[in-house]
Image 1 (cartoon, rainbow, N blue to C red):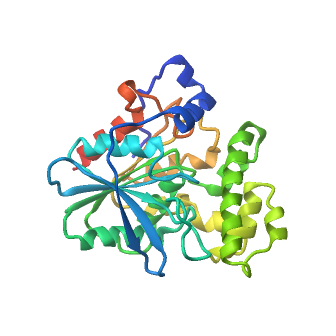
Image 2: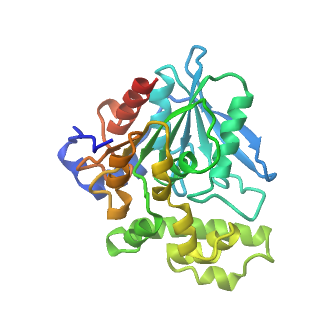
Image 3: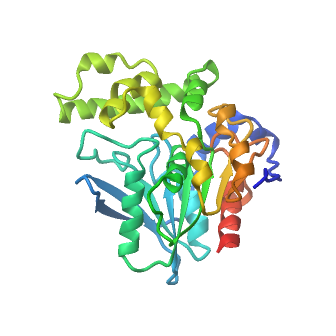
Length: 320
């Protein structure tokens, strides 16, 4: 589909990319959502924790929501998305990717931008429940990349998966990494790196033969982390090999269900390669919306319902 025009026009402060990103990430609160946790076993013996929210009446529709880098199902952007959907005839299954639920995962490996095998396990777990007829996928940042890659890979996507929404997606991971390493994003990168190193130190305690303290001390940037841990733990040669093979951009031409992608022009995490204009023009199933504002997962909305939460609900209802 050609580029979708956007009518997102927030108040003045939220037109600033950094302000909207920081406010939404650190200060926004979402109250009144009930979440029930379920732990499932994955194909390789590890586990995932799922946080469920339910529409008050029985429904045949469920949305699987996937958070971003170092996020979890308790973050405001996940709870906001879950709340509006669970008020509008959807049940919601919010994933906590491996190691993100508050409990370290069992294996040395963890989650990453292209780990679609975990999403595949969750989809099949839900199908085995024999409760839902329609599944929707809904991801933010890393989670958006993951679901788009999943939909475009060679595996057979179950017919019950009808549509997807992806917000603030780093469609080309190497390009996004270049942006995160720039001075404009130094505070975000430092925060991400600190959280990741803390988790790596836990891995060192659990798997002392897999990584050394000297290797951990070598992690000065996010790329170092991916060179030293992510790539080695997940079967890639190095960070660049990981970025190349895990970026969803190359998989977009093969997607055959409707997908809404919303990437703001002033998202400082995204370089030009993260805006898939050509892929959207050539694939009738890709609906690309590029608002002028929004930062990185920083969209604003009245009554504490963000523009993308309302927009995503509208899109999924239209598809159904």
